[in-house]
Image (cartoon, rainbow, N blue to C red; front, top):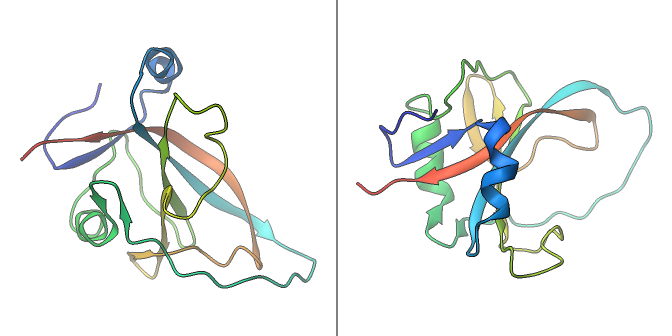
Length: 140
């Protein structure tokens, strides 16, 4: 169960997440952490995009400040360099909510003892799912 003490909480209640989100009829947010598991052995070109700074009422700058000042996760989590955190909006009314659209997600990565806004070096490292859950936005 998530302990509510901050303005945002990353809950890992995975056993109840799927069941709870089946019944949600309005927009909600989910998160996932991916961890580096190896180095890519192929070369790839990419397109640089500006990192989204706002997702509805969620501000990337405010979340970053919270991430770097306290534990927002409801489980024992020690970030490692190049861990990536994605927060995504889910709208159950839309059938194709799995598309990554600009403005539908926020991304953070952990490097040298702090979180940063943006993506880790996806062209260098292979990532694997570490943990996921739902986001609780709390009123102050």
